[in-house]
Image 1 (cartoon, one colour):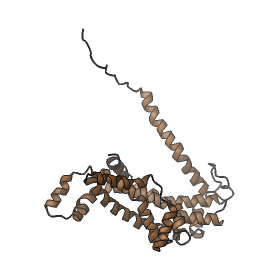
Image 2: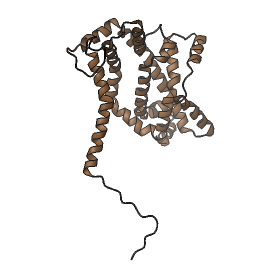
Image 3: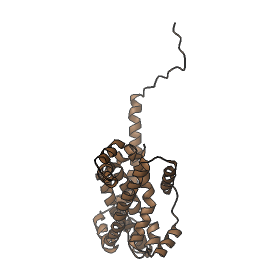
Length: 287
């Protein structure tokens, strides 16, 4: 007879073949319902006439007018000018916040002290603390940047710097310090170490941060309305303005066609860079 001490070991239960089949199928069905139905509703509504799209539904259009609605939106909705405004604001803001945020995250990730820990906590607090819109507008007026692309770029950089620092700091701590020490022994300056050693290794997590920030800026209408409203058009701001002016009033087919065209650039970018985005999330942000 043998005596056993301590807690009895639990024997893991094996899932039945039915359970292994049901769970993935259920997950796929939930994803289809939550993502597929809204996407289908958008495409179908954008393909209808005004009368058919008056009440958006999943009913098929009698005739497909998707391309015609696209042409109407581009021609009458000043969409090309708004696209240029969105690119003018988004590209410098994203590049600036990635460069400055990754440099700050490199310092915060390498040096350990109570003072820098406090700085890191303050730096990432912007993720949960909402910006004070009134204060931002008043400050931009004092600086003479209200209603200018430079002011809007500065606002976006300040808002999303916390996101970059949060993502990149965790990734920096996974990079071996010996790589930097070897470069410094060879006479490399700190700037050269960052550009030649650190920055290439940060590309996966920077791709993740880029997509997130581009998504926020590309779809922003609230802050753009207060900072550059009426002086510079962006895509969501232009949609808001033309809808308020009555051009798209009750024209749901044009609104949904506008939304599709506005979403295409980011959708294509995400499809091309999805591997780097997922790699950046799993290797940096969760560590």
